Length: 251
Image 1 (cartoon, rainbow, N blue to C red):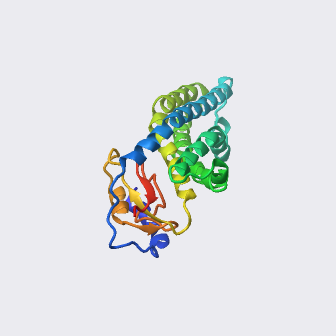
Image 2 (cartoon, helix red, strand yellow):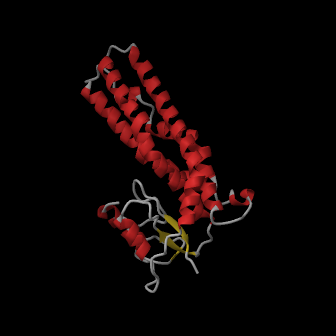
Image 3 (cartoon, rainbow, N blue to C red):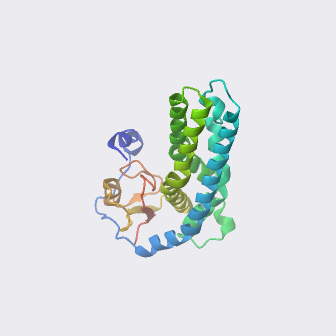
């Protein structure tokens, strides 16, 4: 997260009161291991489903272009932005809710049926939909737009360029993004299961990448659930590769 991103959230964090006597929470390796074990099969399933959506999109675009001789535009090759996001949401909803439930269950022994009152499609997927839009749909559409422009509307050249873009996304990009997506869902579930006002702290995974944002949030010590940490976030993830967790403050 850049400093410019942080500035936009200044208003929402101005009233946050941090505990000056608190210190950063000592990492508990067990909670990170538990998360990683729970997410391993979910990440594998998510990866396959995201790649399936991409393959379907690619096939649809190439089939459309196959017999086109006139110049074409992005809006005729791709579905609308909202429709494209919805395709990813529908494909991943079940697994993302499962990841969120795993996060919730890491902090409570409540029955699954009771947890679903807090871990609902709305409370989880409103965050995850934005994540899918920002990390997959927007950058992918930007790349496809460049293919349209570079080919000057020539359908044959456009097909070749689009094929290359989707190959890269299926073979490289999704594998880079899917863990972040799963960890966000897990963190969302863990956050939602806590009661308002619960004292929480930002815990840094020692196996995660060095990050000034994580350090700032960790050093903020204890805050009340519902307030934002210094970076303007309620919970991880804050950047690509972020492995932090927000947990109830150890007593």
